[in-house]
Amino acid sequence: MKILYIYPHPDDESFGPASVMHMQQSQGHEVYLLTLTEGGATRQRHKYNLSIEAMGKVRVAEMQDVEKVLRLTGMTILDLPDSGLKEMDPADIEAVIEEHILKIQPDVLVTYPVHGISGFHDHLITHAAVKSVFCRMRSKGTGARRLAFIALNEAQAALGKHFRLNCSTPDEIDCVVTVGEEDHQALHKALDCYKTFTETINASGVREILTREMSFEFFQENYNPPVQDLFAGL
View 1: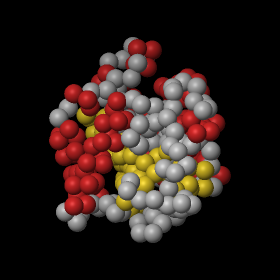
View 2: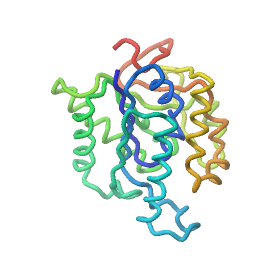
View 3: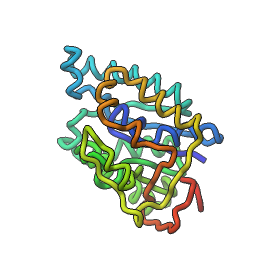
């Protein structure tokens, strides 16, 4: 199976499903990552006295280390405006996403849920763009067979320290993947790759929030009890 994860920034994958990505790769699936921006507009750039462009290059280099840790089949980092997706024509964002889906031909897409977990506008826009492309391609009989959203349960969201985190309800969670210890450690190694974000990572509580049980919603599907695999039923 092929799975394509789509996120707006470097580190979104490591603050989310990195352990699942590592496990899927170990199981022989093709695991791809598309990141829409280089993430250079982060306030962390001021700490290092870097321009947006220079900080973006630093974050890309960190993400290339993540690619090796997770042993991804493929990774693409675009240069759309970080923190500026809200100013773009949505059609332009959707066009680059659709182009990548056509290239990869994934069975499953994964991105942020409707609330973006942290609520950051780039997360919300990415959710909307991916969902729009998925629905349009599905109506044509093309594209992925499933759209999934990474999710936090209520207990995990309550552990958030740096941001107010949004959770998914038990009724919304359709899949709970239990990863192995090696996969869980790969997530920690991926987080360690973002050296410029060490303080933020440590302050966020993400290492405690992301346990070996990772939850997902399925768009327009309902599984109760939740299935244990993002490819279940396909």
